[in-house]
View: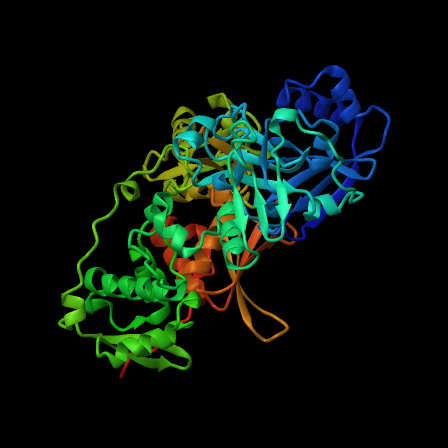
Length: 586
C-alpha cells in the first residue's frame, strides 16, 4: 500500500476527545494490550497528530503520528500497527517468519507467498482468514511487515504451503516507514527452537531438517538463474517451469504453458479472445464497429476467468497492429472512417479459423460469486425523488400533520393538496378542473405580481407550482442496505474532457461514490477496456471525494460501462453527449 509515495491531505493535532477514542479503539482492536500498554502507545501529554493521506492507488488512510513516528494507521475503519509499534510490542500480533531475501520483494509491493514461509518446530501460528499478522525474518523476532492472512493456518497446511499467504499492507523501508525517523529494526532474539542453522557458503544457503528439529528445508544454490527462480517463487513471481507444475497456477492458466514465453502466451490469448468475440458476440448489424469498442466491449468479455488480456505484453504491442495482422489473414476488413479513428467494416464469418474455433466451456467458478466478495456484480441503487416542506409552506401542510422539514413523496404531496382543496371547498363548482385559491395557497404558490390577478388554477398547474416551491430531497437505497434520505438533489456522475499541457485530452469522471461505485475499481476496468493509463486523484472542491482520469476521449467506453454494464439510468449521468461520433461509410 505504501510501496509508492503518498499525498498528505491534512495534518492536525489530535483533540482530547479523539485521543480518548483512539485509546478505546486500540484496546478493542488489540485485546492482548493491557491498560498500561495502551496508555504508553497513546500517551496523554505527548504530541500526537492525525495525518490524512491518499495512497498511490487512491485509498484514503488515516495515520496517527507520535513523537515524529507513525504508530498506527486506519483503513476502512480497521486499525493497524506500524513496524515502529511492533518493534516495541513484538508479540502484539501472530508472527510468521520468512527469509531475508524476500524482504526486498515485499518492500516493492509484493504479497508473501506460502513457499516463502519458514515453519518452526512448534508449527505455524494459528490464524483465521482475514486475521492481522506480522512478518519477521529468520534470526530476528522484530517484525518487518504487517499483512492480512489470505487463508487460515489449516488451509495453508492443506495446500502444501502453496499459493498466496498474506496480503501485505505495510513494510519496513516503505514510504510510511520513511515518514518516521527511519530507524532500523532492533535485534530481538527468536525462541531457541525457532532459530534455523543457516550455513553460509559461497553461493549456498541451507537449513537442514535433521539439525533443526523439523525446520522446513530451503536450499538456494548458485547466484544466477536458480537463485532468481527461488526468489520469484517466494514472492509470487514463479518461473514458467514452476508455474507449469503448480496446480494453483494451472487453475489461473488452464492451458499448459510448456516452454512458451509470456509474450507467446499473450499472443495466443489475444487471438483466442478475438475469435471468440467474432464468433459469439459481433453481428453483421453491429458493423461498422469501432476497434476500441470491439476490444473493450467484446474481446475483454471473452477473456477466460482468472486471466488478464494485456496487448502491451503481446508481440503486437498495439491493437491496430494486431488487427492489421488479422486483416492480412482476410478475417476482417479495417478502415479509417474518420481521422484517426479505425473501425471494423467487414467480417468473413466463413473463414476457416472462425468456423473451426471451439467456444470454451465456462468454468464453474465463473458462474458463481462468493458472498461478500469484492467481485460481486454491481447493482445500481434505487433513487427516489422526495420533497421537503419549507417554512414558507408550513401552513398548507400543517392540517395534514406535517411541519417544517417533513419529507414527502410526490404522491403524498398530491394527496395532501387534493384533500386540502376539497376540505376547504376550493374546487370550482362550474369547472371541476379548476381550483380557487385561498389566502394560504396564494401565499405559498403565487408570485407577488400574481397575488391580485390569479384567482384560479388548473389542477396540474397547481400541483406543479407546489412541487417547484418545495425543497428537493432524495432517498437512495443500495441493495441489502437501509434507505438513506438526503436533502438537495443527487449530483449526477459528471464526465468532462480536459486538455493537458501536453495538448493531450483526458476524460475526467466525478461523483462515482454517490452511486456506490469505487473510483479505484472503475479506473481498473477502464484501464483494461481502453488500454489507456488511468489515475485516481482527489476531486477539486469536494470533501473526501475522488475522481478518475483516463487518457484520451473515452466517453464511449464510459457510456457502455455505466449504462449497459452497471445499468445506471441515463438521467443520472451528464457529459455523454461529448463522445466521439464515427462517420459512417459513404
